[in-house]
Image 1 (cartoon, rainbow, N blue to C red):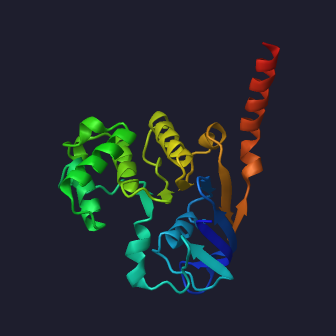
Image 2 (cartoon, one colour):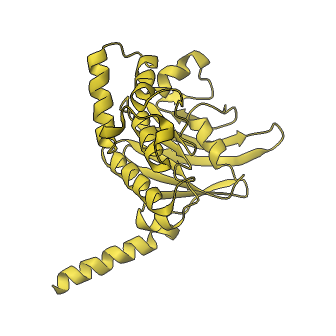
Image 3 (cartoon, one colour):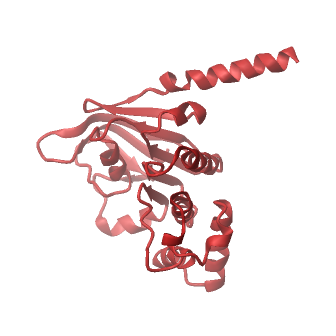
Length: 243
């Protein structure tokens, strides 16, 4: 299990938890949606998973095999190398090319051999369909292209887990769907994906495990959102039998 939360309280302010008694777990290769209104706790929840927000109150709070209640800050960089984080606003370095953005991450995470770095950069750019954009500056790319580069950056170190905070929030519907399709493909290779989103139609089109943040609680609501997809599968099966 990559993430295991049992009765976790998540705070943004000291007096009242934004989410209380959170039970949440992630296994290898799972694709998980986190939904809810602005301010409902989605981003706070994700920040605890990538170590931006501390967890002090919990029965159990384990991420990538480490108890995050007692995790020392000096161990955070090594753990972050085992995950990729994707943001709504891409957060690419605007003063350097796509290639140099990716090389910067590899060097920061301990890579030294230039040939191996070049090989890995070419691999991830190919994975996201951006092979011809290596020498482009971020401002020369569309929003969807920048998000693809952000995904390439996230998978550079072959992470066990990707955390994506509203990755399609600034994209048009068609581009957003392409990004979700890409993330789904990545999850099918064994990397788990946790994604917060407001884009409800995608939940039916690309089913996954669904958790909702509302009224200070986190609730699994997968069955509410996968009925349509399951119905489509049944219809397809009936059509196949009829043929």
